[in-house]
Length: 135
Image (cartoon, rainbow, N blue to C red):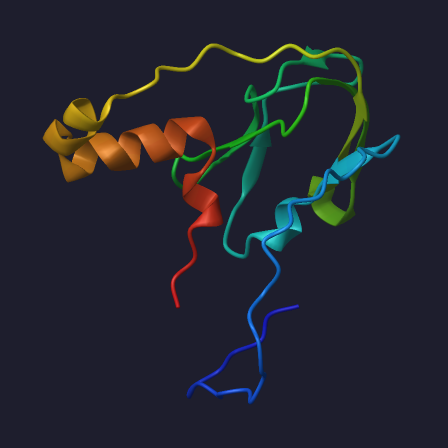
């Protein structure tokens, strides 16, 4: 469901949000829904029964092959549900293990020397680019 807002609306709410951070328990099944990202045509990189590590690419966008969608946790692919015309409705992941892929960590000096293209490439390969939405 997409909500389009042309003008902002200020809510008259008093106070500030709490700064408490709570741990959320992971359920028995996590579903990745490609339909949450309009305009994305997913191409699978995994099959049923595959073991995926946290941060490992699960599918990518056929239109922009650099944009990948990664596994949020270390898990096993339990089910891939296909809909009409073989579109992917969801990918069900069952949590298992605590492995994650190795990623490069940047220091502040390295970050300041990165170009815009480098930053976009890092965001696309890490699975964070789809999370950035235009307002």
